[in-house]
Image 1 (cartoon, rainbow, N blue to C red):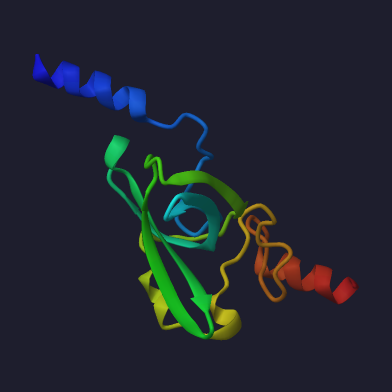
Image 2: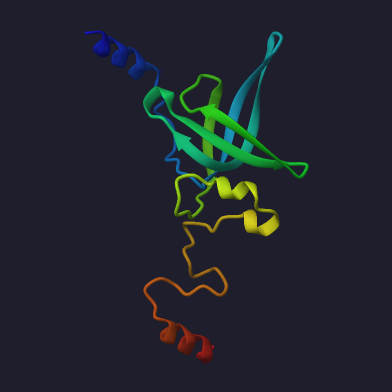
Length: 141
């Protein structure tokens, strides 16, 4: 009985306008900040390092670089303090936790874009193409 009531109350508080988020995405998290009687929205832009939980308890950890220092914040996705989450770009990853980005510096910190695929990255052979065929195409060019 109490589980049904709990689920009904939680279902009302879930946000329905969220984009499809995944680890490695660069996102803009619009956070409501209350200072005295005034309220403003501040944007936190960074890469999603991890996602955890589900339902109302779902959180994302976002990392960004400010003045050459890494800053990580964990946001409850369905919190009323989070005004909006928008995806800037989708990063290609093969892991669910991107803690290795903490040690990276400079361009190696960036993730490959998932939408563009492997073809646009210099020196990488597209999927489904053999090495011989890729070398032959490169020799023709």
